[in-house]
Amino acid sequence: MKGLSWLGIVRLGLVQAAIGALTVLMTTTLNRIMVVEYHLAVTVPAALVAWHYAVQLTRARWGHGSDGGQRTPWIVGGMALLAAGALLATLATTWSRTSPAAAVGLAVVAFTLVGVGVGAAGTSLLALLAGAVAPARRPAAAAIAWVMLIVGFVVTTAVVGRLLDPFTPTRLLTIVAGVGATAIAVTAGALIGVERGVAAESAPRVPFLTALRGIADDPAARHFTLFIAVSMVAYSTQELIVEPMAGLLFGMSPGESTRLASLQHGGALIGMVAVGLGGTLFARSRGWLRATTVAGCVGAAAALALLAAAAAGTGVPLRPAVAALGFACGVFTVGAVGSMMALAGGGGPGREGVRMGVWGAAQAIAFAVGGFAGAAGVDLGRRVAAPETAFAIVFGIEALLFLVAAALALRAVQPVVTLQPARG
Image: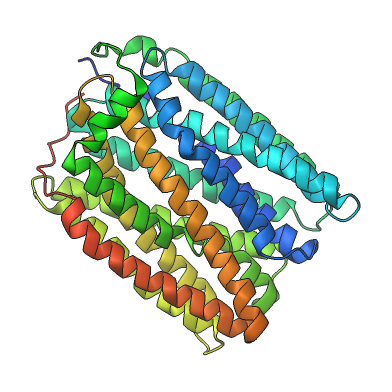
């Protein structure tokens, strides 16, 4: 097989950055504006985000569809749907005071488009990476792809955080429209000629249900699916409540809380780069991926304990706790994604899309459960206790979930020999 060059891998990483740029606006900035500026319950944006994750249960079907030919149309088309959904979701938010019924209806349609777009573009992109990257380059390709995703988070939240103050609905719509147009242009430009330069192995087409049964019959794939589900519930529980907490408990403006999200993603970026460099130094270590994954889960649990203490008003500084959480999640992500890339080809050539889709669906439902449970827990806690106590309890529960995920990783992430980097 003729694999992607390093330049080709980086170009696909740019597509990951474009996906991240749009999704981070939906899960952080828009979420905070609904709660703080428009005075909606935390569960309202949480339910919408949970719905967009539920829609992504179709990831396996999109991945299987892209297994049958060129993946580029699935990626570009998915990105266009994602951008359209993001703009409609923003418009719905601005209607929430004057036309609440219309706003809810439009928001449901918008987040459906966001879910389909992320599922089609993200799954097909990861399948292209898994199938077109030479085995010796897969660990590095996984690190590059996720570093670029975090770069999309960091750059977008940093820039939007500065452009958004002073907040106005018109300013918000203009910013989201600009980010969407940029994401589509970057995606189309990055994918030009990439698949033509890769000689992939052909495989006979099999029915969708047959492909799913093949995954269910693979013990390694089953164990890894369970690990993905539990770890991503832990990962996502804090996603929709950190920025509202920053506004409600620490008095931060929309721009300041968006920059806080940038700090978290910046920590994740540093963690990914550190683990990527360490993986190069210890390339022959059989247990490197498993050790990295477990360490990331344990580190995230410790950082969440600090975040709970900060929310409770104990004097623990907020920003270092958020940065530490980002760093630990970055370490965990590289280990988990590196394992996913290696396992994606376990079903043979031409099966990467459906396998990535199954794990993407597990991640999506976990994100839906975790994000909604975190927000609902805060809303429920605020009814019976002080807001500080409610946030602290939710962060504490999330820390315990990460410890459970660390235990599961000891079995799910198998020790493998990481191949030496390819030349060229």
